[in-house]
Image (cartoon, rainbow over all chains, first blue to last red; front, top):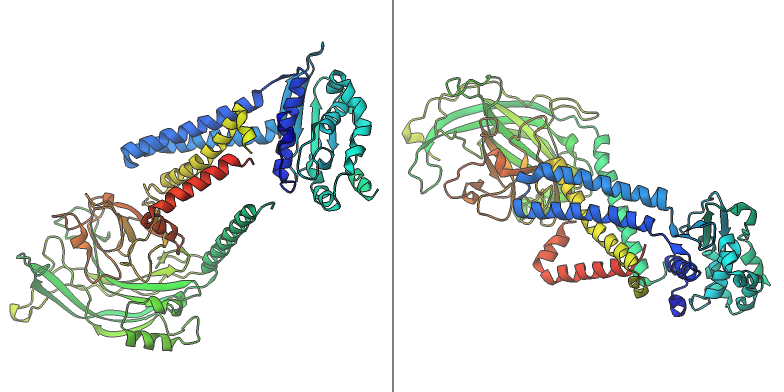
Length: 226
Length: 228
Length: 172
């Protein structure tokens, strides 16, 4: 949990999401999940392949001029378009915002994939979908607080919960205790950003639907009044 | 929108998008403005061929055609809010003599501009490369008007050519089947450059007239009269 | 911000994003080159020889294919002269013959004399292959940035540096 002490701007949705995303592998890997980098590796391979094509095209264009190489250039442009198109499709239709893919160290070798939605989009996926306000795991100054975040994950995803039962137990009491630290304006700012904090877990071999703890988004608003 | 840099970036990005969209709309608006350019008369008034040198230090003597002409044309419909200038030019065109090549005679093989003029739209008058007195007169003619209805109306009589033309061979006397042709090139403030067209395209009509009768260049004039 | 650089995959991904921005810009330029068949499909006007039509800093879009007709008199072309670096944009005023060997003479609208003086020693006319494109589109003033950059080279370094930093340090 190296990023716990790092401070971010609470108005920057991308920062809120990225910090939260970065905390997921830290936590799950500490529970002895074995992380799979398949999605990232394919993305990197496609991206760098496209970059190499462009680099080669740049080199022969620079050395030999346009006229003598224009058919190769045309082919390179077509190939680059294909690779870049494949990369875009991969990001939108395969990765779909996945931030973690890994196998649990339990007997079933359960694999889980956690995807977080981009701040504006709210997409319903097949399995566990839960929407939580960022306020639950960021304090007013923009520090990430690991405990409630991990409790949220542990209580929502059954495989994680089985591996880390004490976080599940803590989940019920934890949030309300530090909530009082927030000032009213910060809460308002985070409230606006609430729809962003969508954590979606897709458990492939677990009947996740039965354990859904999808908290309605309105909950944050009620707490604020209290 | 969480820091000044991001705000500046976003504002600049939005600004460029708006400018690009507005510029595109202006460019497209050209297509919605009808064009009906027409030429009343285009005829030669005096044709001579003289001998001369391509430039002062040259010892080579070449034949030069000096074609005087009269022109009546109404190109005023080419001026819209997006017109910067109209470049009007008259070419002499003639086919190659059959002895030179075996190409079909209806293909124009030689084209040369003998006269041209730049007609600025009132919005571009300040850019015109003319003397201060002429500029004042030009600007006065269109004072308060974004489009001057008199722009593009040409009526010139017995005009001396700006360019005396020759052929790379140095021979041009007694050439047959020469025609004069009027062309124009509309220069927009933003968008596509357009030239006179041979067919109607949407609201843009083809140039009516614009072709003189065929004529022949005479034999070389006597040396006493030659001046280049 | 820098914590993301500790993870090699994330660092690679961020570097890739930066590389892809550059390479996509380059490949779009090359794509335009291939479509228009011109080594330089967009040029910036550097001189006033075509005023008032083109002024310094205007952007010209070129087309270098003869799909329907040959390059004819009246077209504004950009051509290269042997042993001279800077392409010239002037109007074709004479054309003798047809096909790739047709002899072309150019002149700037704002110049008094034709371009014979600008051509290489002993060259009286251009041929089609000297031309890298005919002007078909016009965007005013936008190219002035590049004139600024070439006249003040330090601006170029500064801009590239800032762009690089922003992209590397910023996710999404």
